[in-house]
Length: 169
Image 1 (tube, rainbow, N blue to C red):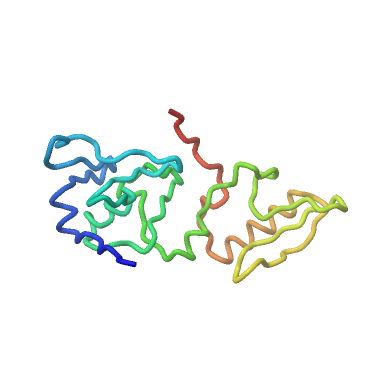
Image 2: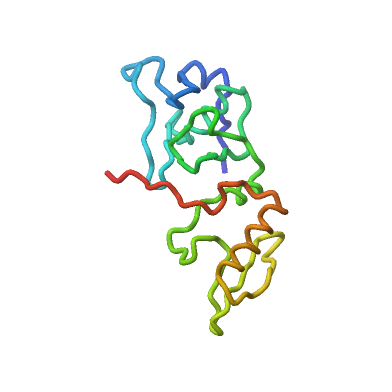
């Protein structure tokens, strides 16, 4: 299979302007000059097509501002279309799991908590596979155990917070 090479930082800078304060990328030339680049996909990320390949705007913003392609771009505030420089960080892919939003089907307001058939609450956390933190009579105790483990394992403070609502069309 033929792999296309990503454009250089200079090639991206020739085609796009990036405002780090607002996070907005605009086209520099052509019929769309001055217009906001890209579209928001169904997952909430802004995608910009360059040379028939769709790139996440957060990655292009990173390339423009640093000159390097990122491993994984993390949005600190969990808003996938907020590409302000202060909201973006390049982190190893494995570390991104330490800054996930709370799943929409979560019943307890904290990740890693499960109600067992015996009525007790189980607390778990992912660390080289799942780590069992214990079972608790009270949900609050299970959540406290989970939060304590998150701190020890250097999870992001925003991990498990409610995901921002996506715009609907």
